[in-house]
Structures are given as structure tokens and as C-alpha cells.
Image (tube, rainbow, N blue to C red; front, side):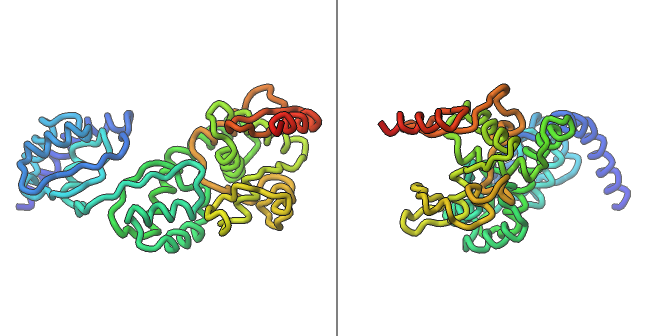
Length: 324
């Protein structure tokens, strides 16, 4: 029996070798929810996996099942599987994962921890949003929770959800930042980049304006001028009971005096950390701001687009034009 097991493992290793090489150079694709009905044949499972883009070859998948003898042991249910995954790994997942019902949740760019927690609770992934908020703040996760669409089982531990989202950040965002720092394209460290990117994320409605908004704030940092960014005030104030929202829509003059290290109207430089969780575009804008753009001010018009200006007098004139 031991000899047979060793032969099977050896055969699987040989079969997996070329796939491992392929996966090393090409990587996995996005996560997809795959439903394996109970009682279906191994051939039908191969069809489902192929149709959903999980495996490349039905034949190879069947060969692996034949050699391993695992076909009768494959589980049914819902599985979160990456597209372009090796047959060996898929078989292991179908043998060991629970096949529990998965819930889809989309975390939008620019959400803060509390907003993410509310969406996770609404989707039935966590029972109590406060558990996620506590776990996220304990891990200092603001800014490091990658905005994306996720598939999670019901009642997943909040700490695990935080870890999955932070792992996505490390996979998608951290390499961009590390490369920029290594090449000398920025003088900011990772936390500072994320802090500025989170401000850009909250300011920009249009993709093409992100590099310009980033350039304005970087220009201000360079000359030692306060950022005076409204989103930092909104973050510092927190949930607005009057408006029933986490980002107060109407920022009043009295709000600008709110005493918090995150309030960039009161304190110079970047806030202590990110004020939200930025997407890739906002991070790239900070790493690659609009070249030769020397504006120091901007104001939003009625469409959500911004008018940029170099001098304060121009800025005042732009504000007046919008109000008129």
C-alpha cells in the first residue's frame, strides 16, 4: 500500500511539473464562483471547470483524477476558484474545501473601514459589522483593504476577511509602490503614498483628473503649504448623524477648525495615515502625477469636474465663476 501511494504521489508530481512551470510564468486569473452539483460525474465536473475557465485542459484534469483515484471523493457545493489554476490544485480544493455557499461582495474604491463593514454585514458575510471594524483597526488596515469583488462564505471570521483583503493589497498595490520607490520615482514611503492616494480617491470623480489632483497636493507638499483637503476633514469628523452618511457632504467653515491630526486645514503635511482605501488608479496617479503641472488650487464645478489654478487670486475667480 505504501509503495502504491508513493508511486501515485510521484506520478502526480511528474504530471504537475509542466503545469507548475506554466503557472509560475502566467499566474492565476481572477476568482470565480463555481457550483458543483451533487452526484455529477467526474467528466461533468471537468466540463464545468473548463466552461468557467478554471482549468485549461479537461483531458489533463481527468488523467490526474484517474491516477490519484480522487474522483469519488470530490465534494459538491460552491467553490471560490481562481481561473487558470492547475488541475492538481483544483483537485486538492475539491477534496478539502467545504463547498459552503459563497456570498459576493464588492468593495468600492474610496470606502473607509466602516463602510466596508456595513457592506460585509449586508451581504451576510459577517454577522456584526463592529467585529470587522475592530479587527481592521487592530491591524491598522485603513488604506490596505484592496477594493475589489470578493467571494466569502457566510459568517467568515472578521479577522480572516481583513487578512484576505490585505493580501490582495500586497499582491496588487505593494509591488507598484516598491518599484516606484526602488527606481527613485517618489520621495514618499508606502504609507505616505497610500495616504495621498486615499485623498485623491475621495476628490476625483473622473479618471483623467487623478494625476492632476495628485500633482496639486505634491506641489503643496514640496513648498511646505498645507494640503487643505476637504476629505481629510470629513474623515476626521466621521459619521454625520444629521446627514446619515460617513462622509459629510456639506463641509462648513466651523468644520475646518475640527481638531484632529487628520485635518489638513489645521496641520501641515500628510495625515498620519490613509483616510480611505484607494484603488490602483489613485495610487498610480500619486506615483505618476501630471508632468509639468504647477497648479496649487482646484475647485469642483456642478458636474464634479475641477478647475485648476496656479495662484490664489485665480482660484478665487474660479470659485466666483462657479457660483455665478
